[in-house]
Image 1: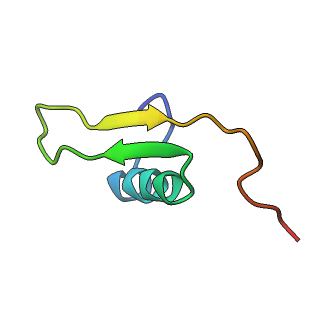
Image 2: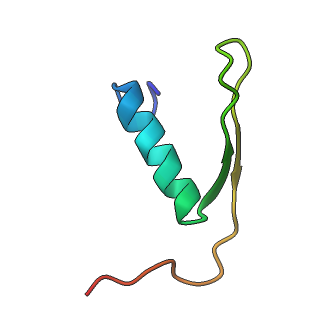
Length: 52
């Protein structure tokens, strides 16, 4: 979290859920403070969404 410059755990989890929702990453939280969560970055072949 320090390198991402996100200082709130709530913001971190919100961002991770959003990235997972948009299929930018695959996110599997561990819920264990001694074991890290699994994150896989998906290959982006086409744009995710367009803003109007």
